Length: 446
Image (cartoon, rainbow, N blue to C red):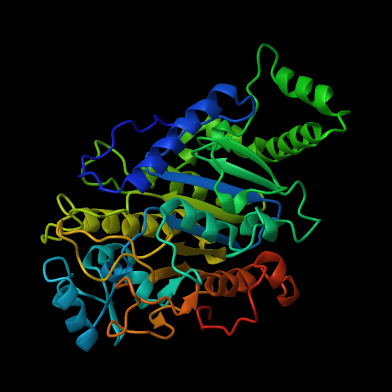
């Protein structure tokens, strides 16, 4: 059986952004509507975290996890410039800049927010955690919805409406059913939309068709009903049923022993009763990867980064400080995730991204408005860690909106990681990222 669904969100200040709040509310209303009509989708949410999984690769292969920090995370609080650049930063942020003396990491140019230290310092020291700064869309877009769509389609300026992960999975016709499976929500992100099929479920034990009466009777009835159907819906149902057959051993194990999903291995979050937003989503992800069913790409949504007001109270205490709480939970959860993977950790790589960064100068509410250039974090197998990679445009020359310039295309970063870990050939680059020219590696992978 599944663990109890989390129900109480931590009490935080309104982010002050109608764009983000409207998107989040409309997303949740849509989830409810889809739950009412979804015969094959067991729908649920992880509060501010959602997960979608793409299947089809051979067992034993590498896995890339793309963790989206929804809301526009402030990269200049996560990975903070040092020295003269820090002096420029504090001129723009007199009350909310992270104290330079509390930064950690031995990179000469940058230091990390102290709330990440307990979770990620070990990976930094062993060379499996690194970062790249000043990344973004080719052109600034400060609308949450539009920027998320642009990033997940990854075809800026094009009217192509297929997600980049969907295109990547579709490269190899031997990828079985090429099924996209979402755990935590029936709302697929744009990155997975396209010709690949999709299922939705809250946790691993929901990846099945519940029987009525004789065990497997409904499953058999659906296969008999839709097996001969030649139209599009028939193919979709057959794809779904094939995927569920693949999940059957994992579902049986999780139902027989719920401890197969190691929820208790993950940290809570200050302000929640007994859970954190990444607890179930990462525990179920680790269980799926350990089951080795051919997972190749996983996407995770972790929201609540739209900090127009009260980004920090200056204490850096996760019990009261919004940014510190978010980062402590992120770092601690990722540390637990790699431990939970066990021997499978050596084939899993995590990369984080956000739709845009925040403005360099703080506003009157001790928050930050929508910006441009941002940071991406890389963790796990194959990462050339222990450093912040790439060029740095600096804070002396900002764009016309007082934003950090993005001098690196986010698609370059994604291509460098996925092509290395998933062995996708250079000839497929324009299929995955149409319009992206030849990529000069930044050196993110070892």
